[in-house]
Amino acid sequence: MTRTERKAKAMCASPASAESPGRLYSVGEVAGFTGVTVRTLHHYDEIGLLAPSARSRAGHRRYGDADLDRLQQILFYRELGFPLDEVAVLLDDPDADPYEHLRRQHRLLATRIEKLEQMAAAVRAAMEARKMGINLTPEEKFEVFGDFDPDEYAEEAQQRWGDTEAYRESLRRSASYTKQDWIRIQEEGDEIARRFVALLEAGEDPDSEAAMDVAEEHRQLICRNHYDCTYEIHRGLAEMYIADERFIRNIDKLKPGLAAYQRAAILANAARHS
Image (cartoon, helix red, strand yellow):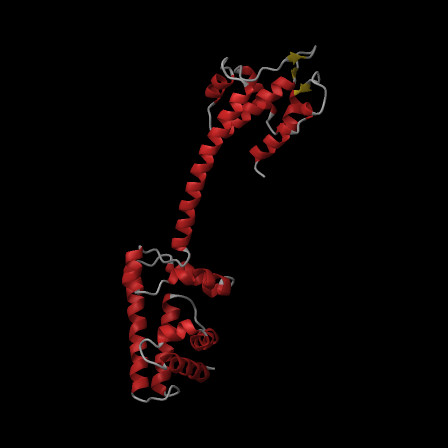
């Protein structure tokens, strides 16, 4: 709860609403249950915005129910951003009644809520745009990634790996990447995929030196551009390539059986370095 919300709550449940109408409160008491400082109350009195209804024999300020009602109105308008001189004009308008004040405040609050919702929507859009750290326009994303939209998998990636250092490191790095960076990374990945296809078509075993070397280059590409891809992490990626139908469909577009071939080559390379 914000300080202003505490003030409003305190005003609505202040002792003035529970005690007799004739009860008067010291400046310290008013400050205590409204959250407004004594200094502020003194200032309001000095500028004529909130003059207490009475004074003690010693000259100390004493506030009544009407004063507390006015203070509540002041707090509402201040929260809405009104300067003190405008608040004074609004509250001292002889043609305005308490209900009119409430209607005005409701209208102003509704307008503010609408603006805040628009701002929140803009922030949400910005968050979505940066969720994967890919700061590209829709046109640039299509140019780089084709019909694969990485944002579609952003939430899933965060749920699965969001608590890992590799995920956080990947976000940190990719947040600074330009369109040219992504094109370069994509081209490097495409070249590795083409080399895997060539080996598969040539009948090269996935545990051959040539296939394992390409698998190592694949791991190095991830290390170079995204995060420290250990052999253990690389093995996990390889298993996902054949466990998730989405990966199989995407990888096997280049060559049927390519996902399984890459998995085998990555596992063989990890075993070679273990």
